[in-house]
Length: 166
Image 1 (spheres, rainbow, N blue to C red):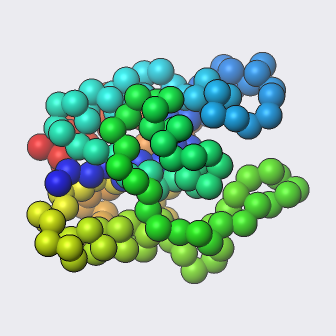
Image 2 (cartoon, rainbow, N blue to C red):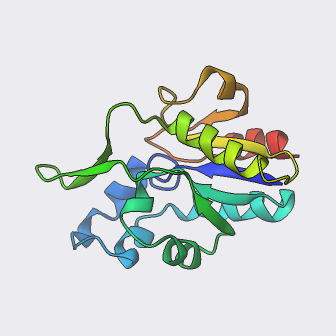
C-alpha cells in the first residue's frame, strides 16, 4: 500500500495561487476552496498518484472544513481517508480551524499508519508533503518533502515524492 499524506495549505494552495485568485472574496465552500488550488500542483499530485499507484490520505486541517468525499471528487484525487483527529477548534477572530495543542500532524500520521498496519494489511510505504516541518516526527523526516508555502508544490518536490513512493 502506497500512501501520500497530503496537506493542502502551502502545497496545493500557495501564497502565489491565493493572491492570484484573491478577487473571489466569497464564503468558504467546496467551489471556492477548489478554485484557489494551484493547477500545476494538483496536476503534479494526480500524475504522482497515477505513476506510483499512491493513494491520498488528507493530513490537512481541510478535513474539518468540507466533507472528504467532496474534496476527493472536486480535486480528482484517489483519496482513501484522512488522518485521525477531531480535536480542532474554530478561531473565530481569524475564521480558521486550528489544532489543539498536543496533537501534531506527525502523531496523527503515525496513528493512521499503526491503525492500518495492525489489521494485517501490507506494510504502508508512504511520503508526507507539507510546507511546515515542525509537526513531523523525527522518525518521519526521511519520508518528508517540504514545500515552499509561497510557491506550493514544484517539479523538484514531485521528483522527490516519486522517488519515495517508487
